[in-house]
Length: 362
Image 1 (cartoon, rainbow, N blue to C red):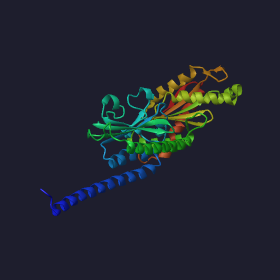
Image 2 (cartoon, rainbow, N blue to C red):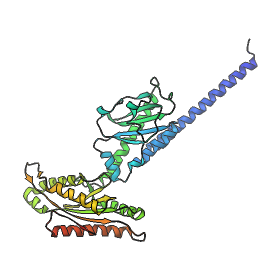
Image 3 (tube, helix red, strand yellow):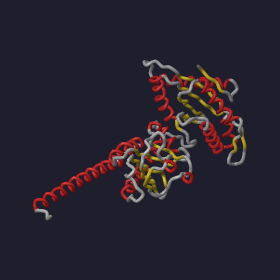
């Protein structure tokens, strides 16, 4: 049966309507991606960046789960974020890979699309996030170095297939990689401004700012906060006997041994000269004294070897004070000063008691 002109016109109108609807959908998708790119590129901080990845990208691409994995074997990025008061535990979709790339069970440097495989993909979609049916694993590469993966997941098993073209997805991963690198470098610059250049630990400015934050947190939530004042015993003799270069080596090693006893959530800062201050978060007096004793023992019981090959024995004196419940009416700055003053008083008692001691003031 031959179609009449009216029937053909009706079919053409239907096809045209479908094409217009598809063009409209494509335009909306492209608009969403453009908005995503602008928001992502405009991120100035790491927090803004990961919010864009997990919220905007998920919505723009109509995905069920997105994770961002960053290679961080020395915990450098995590330490910077902790120092900048970004709690990575608030972001279960943000994953840090501590081991070498060879130990990873998935493709490293090329996009991988297909059905979710628990053996291959469980590291990129941990138990804290939704398990997808199909995935697109996109490597993040900057300056020919692999820095991590952007992993896209869908509950639709046909959303990502092994034969699917991945050019568009790889382009999106390239934009993400550039923005990740830029934002991390910005955070590093900010971190440098809060870091003591000699020892690599935080400086006085950082610790004083962090102290106010933690005292305020203690006031609001009733957590415990402990402070330590640490002073290297007879440091002048070190400079006199080994010169300032030897003194610098000693300060770096002492800072490293103190830091080795701390958690990422704690804070260590050089206050000047041979003095260091430690803030122990959610730690009472008993725990603080135990940590201080480990620090003292680590420094006193293991000789330090200078680059010249000379060995010397060192010791530190440590004063400890603890802050518990604070009245809402109390001034945060005043309480912070009092906490450090008590730690300083305890340090004086340790010096008076013969040095190489841990003392506390209630």
